Image 1 (cartoon, helix red, strand yellow):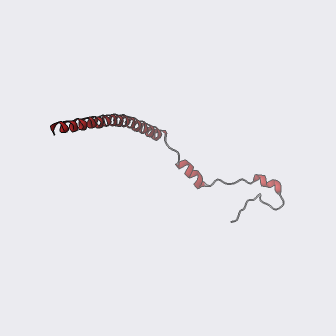
Image 2: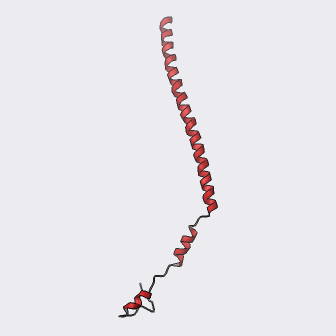
Image 3: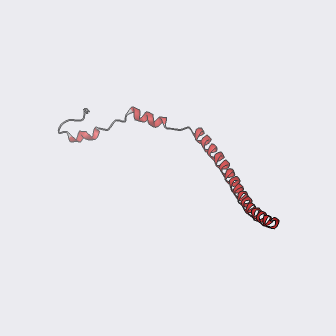
Length: 91
């Protein structure tokens, strides 16, 4: 690597204060390309809110289905016991 600057001279230390690092053009271009329009941010936020609403709805529906499923299994156990008793009476 080689560096050069007109104020970079042997023994002239006060001139070193004039030397500043250049900002690469490619670096600033990548920073500019990462900027996002506020409209797209708002659109993404509305979509996320909609998805959250759907998720909450699905969660409540699954909870209801789980409770109904547990009730059906309890009813099945009771019906099996009744069936066994009826079989014993018939026999």
